[in-house]
Length: 284
Length: 205
Image 1 (cartoon, chains in turn brown, green):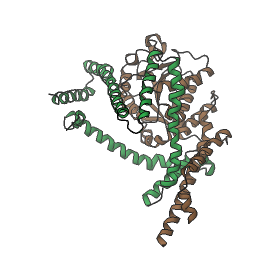
Image 2 (spheres, rainbow over the protein chains, first blue to last red):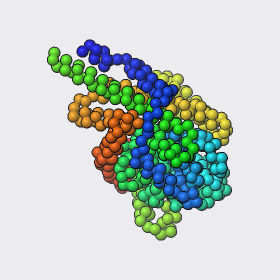
Image 3 (cartoon, rainbow over the protein chains, first blue to last red):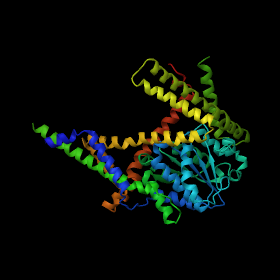
Image 4 (cartoon, rainbow over the protein chains, first blue to last red):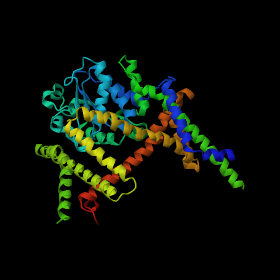
């Protein structure tokens, strides 16, 4: 009884220490737990994979900032690698909020050196921030040139060959929104429902559950959920002999597994303590 | 006049855009294009003016009145001007990139990663099977938490499939109910604003 009381009232810094150990050790000494691929991730991969190089482009939207970067940036990196390897034209968009542009630059820095034959303007374009949120989604449906006028680096969009071929959703095979907020719903509501552009989504693990209705109706072609989703995409591109880089998400999966297990142990211990104490208090 | 004019504007443009959706005539399409590509984007830039105003008023008052944590407001004001200055002066060049990559990104990532520690502590202290509903939530959450990571399949091969079933059926049914409710609520609120029944956005009342 005293043991459980003491355990329930344990200083939370001990819990923090255990979490820190559970994160650090698997990162320093990876276990290599196998990652299984879920249907939503496989569907997104297949949808991107079936795009033809000379046909439509992929619009990859970085609707996130550094707070959700550990989960979402590896998704962006893996999808970029997939498109570059298959020579699928890709329009990188820094997202509906300003900090996303920095995320695109981070992803490009990681990927570009593995694909030296990829040329800016012909194979990919980087669009920066324009205020308006949902209005930007609608405006892209009318004209990309009319919405942005210049790319992120300040070049006029008229000088970029890719944009002369792709000026609205008609030239986009799939728009993939990477976001930890509810922005993918806006892309589905405006880009898909109004203009018929197919939407894929990459989101944080905590947001993934809310998108299952959209997956079931086909409004989203597929989904990557959390770090696990990113690791699944990394596994899929690796299976297809595409350069994967350091596979940041796969490395993180061991640490995430151990921390989840630790939290479950905490929940079980907390509940045992709760019932033992409650029973003793009822007795007298 | 101060109230009637904004109400008339909301009514006119709200209905114009609803009606426009159903008219494919080139004039209607041109009206739509001008609205979304010019007018509305220009109006949305004014959000920033309001944001800066609110930010300034809040933090300057806090510093003036020496409220608890007033020094943090000085840091916030300094940070805003530093980042904006870096953007303007270096035209998103070296200094801005360095600030973004080595100050903004690590700070924000650190703040968010602290969540893992607090969730672990909260799970231990507050996640209790007090009644049937709480027990169902607890069991489901535990299964999903384990099944969504590779160790779940390592413990039991069927775990990922069970998790996918939970997300695809019971979770989806509940989410869909919420979505439909939210959608109906949005339609009702939009109509109330367009018709001038809901006026709280004008302030007062």
